[in-house]
Image 1: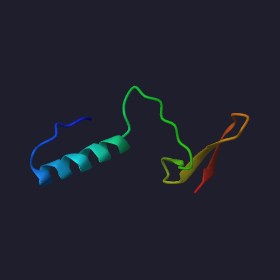
Image 2: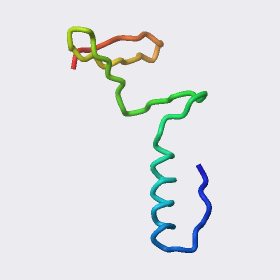
Image 3: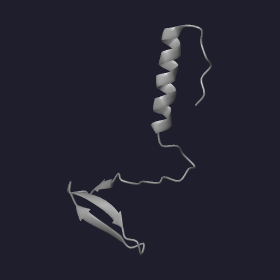
Length: 64
């Protein structure tokens, strides 16, 4: 998201924060790549599982 540069300093700072936070949002039609963060899924009974993948591409889930 690219917002116009306003003359007002306060508005300029607000736009900078909005643009910065927009970069952190997940976008549609793009691959989602995760590094050190985990993907946590919750089962119907409330148990939480972290997904992991080995170097061979094998998926696993570990209760957290």
